[in-house]
Image 1: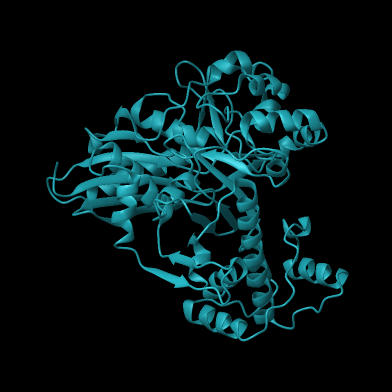
Image 2 (image 1 turned 60 degrees about the vertical axis):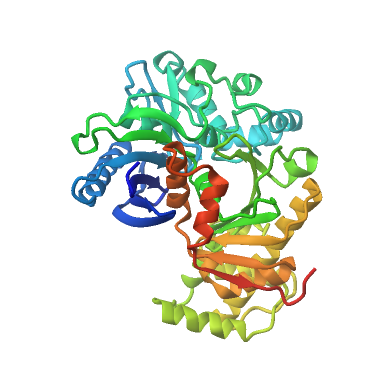
Amino acid sequence: MPSTLYSAAIDLGATSGRVILGAWSKNKLTLTEAHRFPNVFRSLKTHDYWEIGTLWHEVQVGLRKAAALLPRGAKLASVGVDTWGVDYVLLNDAGRLVFPVHAYRDARTQAGLGHLANTRAALERIYAATGIPNVFYNTSLQLEEVVASCPAVADLATRCLFLPDYLNYLLSGRMENELTIASTSQLLDVHDTDWSRPTLDHFHIPPQWFSRPVLAGTKLGRVKHLPELAGTQVIAVPGHDTACAYDAMPASPDGDDLYLSSGTWSLVGFESDKPLLGPEALKAKIANERIGDGRYRPLTNVFGLWLLEGIMKDFSSRPENDKAWSALIAAAEKLPAPAPLDLSDPAFANPPSMKGAIDAQLKKRKLPVPKNLAAYTRLICHSLGQGHAKAMQAFERMSGRRFRRILMVGGGSKNRLLCQATADAAGIPVISFNLEGTAVGNLASQLIALGAVKDLATFRAHLAATLKQKAYAPKTAR
């Protein structure tokens, strides 16, 4: 094995994509961004679609740029793909698209969403079978709508691949479903690594569209049709970007860490050998998604920095650089903690004015309205901290665990007020990391598959030794 091993991570998000070149040498991972590009869905009449041809073009551009960054004589050992969850393509035997690629925000699932929500027995049965709650973007509801509105598709399509699976196919020529991305669909058997036949039948989805999912780390073959990547191995990494981000967390092997990926949403969860099921988990909308090795990642979504992003639109004094942000946080830190917002309020989902939505809730509860941007920032960070703590407490109650630390990555990990508010509310330390989580987790899976690293625990130990981190101690320990 060469002294430096080079791999490429294709990391696609719903608003942007990138190709990251990773160099592994002396147990240290160095990242170089080879290519970044915007991603957006387009509306045609009443439906929304991804520009899948543009995505594939940009991926190829990025891989060529990554190859061009290599030192003379070096080769790209491998490539892996992760994307957002649930979205898919339908193909025929020749690998040809037989249906447009819908975007998950398309409103076509609303009828199915409401029908399932109002059928309690079916809702409970599907949650017990799949461990995934009823959410508008689920692949189950998307495919149900396709089959109902375009019945001929059942004869035209022979395979359903999720977006990372499809890009893996374009790269390697091999069609496989990968486990972590499959687990976002509400179609996978929560007690197995195969599909839930009763659930497929419930949504009238042809079972032959899927193959038994492979585990992350499976080698799919060499890259085809790109001369610059001749000999490069395509590896099925955790296809879901959140699974990659969690793999990058330098967690304790004792399993007593809670994970918090803080961005537009706060994704709170932990790793487990068994799923978290039952009436309370269903009510809390706990999603039992999978880790690349087949274990579980019980997860809940809390309204995140979407609130802070929204409130900025109502103020002309929005901070435009790090210095201005630091000044805003400093001003907010000087204010006392107010009564927290009720984050379950659906008015926060996509209001015309976030300030208006917040003010309306506070007035309804007969609470004072913040006087300026700093006061709104204090209120939002305090409320998110409380929301994170409530999620932790619910997980402890349902799982019987007791968490000792919260590991925090994402944009919120740079917000010291939010980190401290979370530590204070939870009563345990918050450790924030400056970490490119999805790309790092993607590359970690490749390195393990190539034999450069023994396992994920070993990779995490090496990573922890090089990461910049900051600890926030709670003002009052629990």
